[in-house]
Structure formats: structure tokens, C-alpha cells
Amino acid sequence: TLESAIEQTKQDVRNYAKRQMSWFRGETGVVWLEGFGDEAQVQESFWKMIDSV
Figure 1: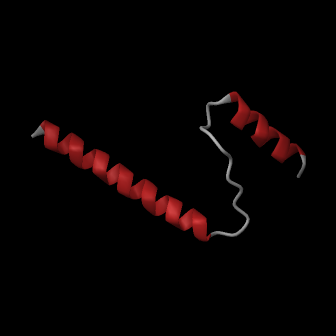
Figure 2: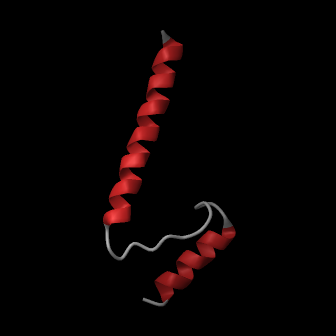
């Protein structure tokens, strides 16, 4: 059914995101920013970090 396909897709996306996070945690040099990408504070922190490189 459509409902079960939607639920399966949601679960697949969550599983993929979890695998990505596990992979990034194992990488050296990754900088984690607090918040979400569309928040002004996160964007400001990002640009400050980029400007300092």
C-alpha cells in the first residue's frame, strides 16, 4: 500500500542518516556546529570558521 511504502521510505532515510553520522564520527577533522543549517547562528559560525582558514 501507499502508506506502507511511505513508512518504509521514512525508515530507510533514518537508517541512512544514522549510517552517515556513524561514518562522520569516525572521520578526523570534522567540525560539528550546534543547531540546524537554516539558523542564523549556525550560518554565522560556519562563515567565521571558513574565514579563519
